[in-house]
Length: 426
Image 1: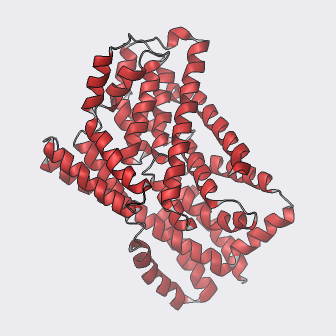
Image 2 (image 1 turned 90 degrees about the vertical axis):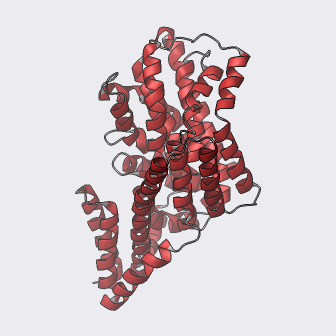
Image 3 (image 1 turned 45 degrees about the horizontal axis):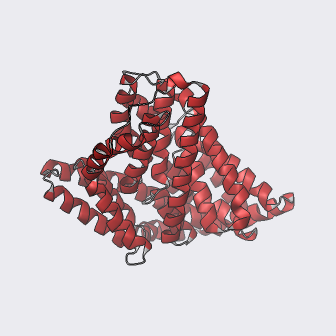
């Protein structure tokens, strides 16, 4: 059998296994091993199966992931992020739909110490949804705002998706983080615009809150000094070039532990929970990365990437049409797959094709991160939506959360359109 045919069959088998709900790591590793065996023989397949897990896990850059995860979990379990919503509320609450906007701003602040969409949604949702219910908000837009705000966690550094993209695409993670900061803030601006449009159409659904005094504002802001210190310490060093991404994560974890001990808010139990959560989350990410590296080897050895590139070239698609097709593919994948699995599954196929078209990898990484996070709020999977429903089931039904997310999906699509339009200037 021709190697290319084996590559195609492997891809079909992989998609079939994922559709059958086989864990994506097991699907990647199993299909890749059998495919390499068929292409090159049993000994090379066993050799790769024994060496790639080590070479992947021993990557200096990849070690930044558990460090940033630990920083986020320490901040969460020691209560450093608890006051973010309250601080955002006193500054933004007086605006139309102010509590929804405060939820979005609070999620952005939480994103800077977690890098996780789900963690952002769960943490802010527990506080913000009950408060908006008390204030008489339309709970569809209230819960939609919190679910959408959580997606900013995968854009604003430290973003696990951007770290993985940088490793796979051999692109500067520092530059990806800097670009992710701008895309994350742009997402926040588009989401705020969606809230204001909703208020303009139905002012009674999003009542204004009473304005706070400047004394109240500064008092609440001072309560979140640990988070501000953590953000400044980590990202100041990262963007100034003083830290690498891994060193920034390690330093951030140390500072988070130190702040928790000084404030006496980090207990031994909280510290153990942070370590366990880090090991579980990091282990899951690493085994998917191992599977993705094996699949990348299979794609290269079978010549599948070259054949796909030749096929796309034969279609005569221009660069914009190709990017539009990729956008649609990611939007569809996001409806069924979790972001990291979708990212590592597709990059071995798309990167060689995009290189032929001269697409900037940094820009493409930011676009992919945004597209994958849209998948976190789109049905039928929409993990952030289910997380918000789980923490607010006493206030809202699941279908109401999905209804409330629609304005924010439209805002996301508008931002994606803007990124495509601005590509020529990058």
